[in-house]
Image (cartoon, rainbow, N blue to C red):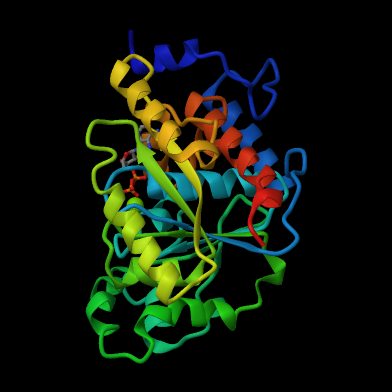
Length: 307
Ligand code: ADP
Ligand code: MG
């Protein structure tokens, strides 16, 4: 069975109720664009902007994919969302189709040159209220350029403190795959951490080191910091291993783990090459539905957060 055929078998609740005519890719994309612009049913918005760092020093676990698709799902439902790309690779910027060539105003200028955050934020096409602060490759040098600067771990926090976030509901910070100064900056800047965990062997390796780093940042630099959300990604229902990893994570972390699990889906991995989130690229696919459910769950958690 092809991956696509298997995805179709998964019973899904469509985020966009497909009209009878929406069974071609073009019709689906058009319908998704309508929802993205006009908004689906409005979801509850937090009373103040939630800043969520998406961190895991392992590469390829779904940090960027989760940042982009959670943000898109929330923006499709009336929330105002900024994706702050902190990875020099600029994958989130690519997926949102925001220019991030070397030299364009980017998060680099904010961190290293004290430019105001507002001056680098760009709207994401096709969405009423989705924005991106892009990362250019210049950011690769920032790990070193930041070293001699004053309060080098708090540069992003400072930039966010002087940015008026009252017009936003969510800021997602997409971290690079390391525990260097860029990730530390994002942990200092946010009260919430979301850890994506890939449902694969070795998934839990390195988690201890990440949690230790978070604890260090919490005790020395950002007492508000806590891991509020864990998202299981790339779940392959065919393997016993995936469910074992999921069970283990749930046993260990309890209610912090979202009930929604993101399945492995070809559509999810195809979307970025079209400069799109899977939410617009194929809203009826299992990956889009799962991200929609995860995003909805995230909105419901506002009340549970520690003050
Ligand atoms: P990270 O940001 O943690 O390095 P990415 O989000 O870039 O990870 O994901 C790594 C790769 O896996 C990318 O090519 C992405 O398209 C793919 N991917 C992510 N989530 C899924 C999924 N649910 N199904 C299939 N491929 C996925
Ligand atoms: Mg990434």
